[in-house]
Length: 539
Image (cartoon, rainbow, N blue to C red; front, side):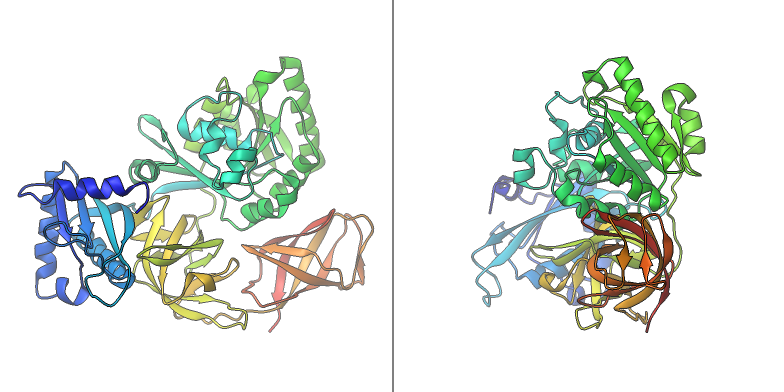
């Protein structure tokens, strides 16, 4: 059962008591437990358990009345969680956390392995759909303190000079060992009327969930990758997520690098309002910090942007003028915590920029399997809203088809929610598809949508960098939403030179995707890079 078995055994040991906060249930069934008035009775029982536990109850699922570990099949456990979520909603509560374990015996007698779980039910409704939530994408050269800065922001702890706080954001063992991030990672903190709400240990799901549940404003970080071999992953993080702001780090001891210029190009070409943090100011003297700041200012001016050093102009000016070609620059140190109060103030007050109406749409960034739940598709909601129980379409699959799926449940930073709207980073548990079939670049749409995936579209592109020229047949990788696919370019005028803007047809090499007019994208092949906008979609 793994290292967390103690939590299950502790709940079983406490047992059900009259007036206690622990409830044993082998299973819930929609047909049985939501019919003939039983829902009201069970919701009242749940409310009683929650109040008895001072606002928190534990439901031990897959066990007999006397605490025996019976286990239930995965499909039964999933239905049990669906029903429990409805009961919690009826009782003015929500499911805050779920942990599951496998057991050898199954009560149905028709499987070799079953599931038991402990669900924490807390008082209060789940996250309101109109909460204040901004998403910040980070970028910067490797070793420029990007993940360390985010780690100190979300925990409120100073770094030890060796990147101790960055470890909270790494998701793979080899990343921690090498001190290099190799994939997107995520962090969260928030604000209430008393100030910042930090997480002592971001690895603890319950702490991150508590921030989402209780904060008046939630700030999510999509922490990208600074190492050159993973530039495509960074582009995916900046293009494929529905970001409100960018945060670019430049180390004071190193200054702007080739990768810094790459990341500035991607951030600004996608019109993302951006803050530049000059990091590691504790390692150099004031003259060096000022020199690096001037270098950053030159880079921004060359890109057609107006730098705004916060030390000279103040945080109010930065908040009022960010965007509209203005890029604030903040001096920071995760060791001394210099500048972190300025970033706190910015993230507390900056307006959300990406709210979108219209039908629900979410491009899949990653997928994974959860025991007892099934396939989960993770990504950022691009538009509209999604609710548990919704019928959706998932696709396109390699043959261009879409498949009907159902939303089992929705989580945001480990906090279970009934609904999510545009701009939220969520994991959506899906019924009707296996995890192995869910791929990055697919999209979730309403069941009544009529999507028309394509292999080819027309675009206006700008060549940011190329050693020679782009001719017909040029094949870069196109990064559009969460899609990352090789594609053939055929410029309308036959070729495109560095610095040129022109029309081209773009044809995916291997399979169709859902592409819509107006979408922005980045293309890259070796040292060649550029940005584009979809102008029309071919049938």
